[in-house]
Length: 414
Ligand SMILES: Cc1cc2nc3c(=O)[nH]c(=O)nc-3n(C[C@H](O)[C@H](O)[C@H](O)COP(=O)(O)OP(=O)(O)OC[C@H]3O[C@@H](n4cnc5c(N)ncnc54)[C@H](O)[C@@H]3O)c2cc1C
Image (tube, rainbow, N blue to C red; front, side, top):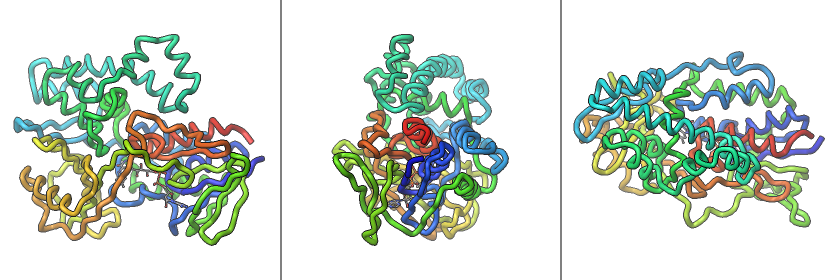
């Protein structure tokens, strides 16, 4: 049995702690905040992509997900407002229905073109999933894939950006915007994000988007309970200041009170032990608006495409923000004093004037520490592993839990 310290109890830290305890390690999870859950409980987190990642986590650590939380598909993937005035309600019932909705809204060859594009991306997904999302960079999986399916690997990793891919495959500008919006919804610029991420529309439309019945809190509680059942010791309200090492191998952490804890392995779900943010890091903003009253007819996910780019609005129940609704707006710019006013103005221009109903605005910066597409190696140093949405650059629940699976696989049995 080896002693593992996990630093940070976000969804990634909880997931890796539960998995490692299941692999018979003696795990201590140290969280700076008074409660576990990290950004997931920040208000506004709602939708879950790739539910298979969560299902795998709960199954591999004990009982199936369905015994602790119920996932239900969202009613729509999103409502899109295009510059030509057309409005598309994107169904969350699979690729065939998406093609039918495109035919009904845009006419012409829209559905056929989209079906051809997503069939291409299905092959890219095979490569991205096996060689990138479910395995560490430079793993032998990628080499094996490259030998077996060289054309697919080349397609998946071609040097274009997501915007380049959408322009190469699609002629209708609205379909191109649809591809690009799957990246910009994470606050990222489709002109800078590399080609493999053009797979996201295929992934979302195939595996659909889900919500946890009752919100994400029950999910976090269930995961913490699962970790404890497996023997994980969870210490909240304690910050780790740094890792310690001997002869180049990480062998413990130092707590904020100066105490040192020894470990055979340290796993970080936060900035501790990570390289400093690189010069090509991308800074994006998430605005959390607490809004009083309800907005009838508002889709949970609305995307406004205009001359300034795509504006993504995710509307959730209050989420503890103090209003009746919480709106999360994601934009690919660093936070700034004038950003909230600009966003409210843009929303108003498109018929979503909420400025008189906003009771509070919080701004969250999200720094993607590596250029998206350039995977961060979870093996940061001998004895030190990384998990969480900073390892899988697009972030989100699915990617954080998958990164935990990759790290646990690399660490292996005690
Ligand atoms: C407003 C908003 C809306 C979102 N909406 C969605 C959504 O709809 N769907 C989705 O899938 N994702 C969404 N996300 C993203 C999702 O919440 C994150 O990707 C995910 O929660 C990240 O989990 P993590 O474990 O990787 O990191 P984090 O949640 O950042 O966890 C890191 C943990 O480490 C702790 N920590 C930090 N420093 C220290 C230290 N020195 N010592 C000890 N502990 C430390 C922190 O307190 C925190 O608990 C949203 C995020 C935000 C902010």
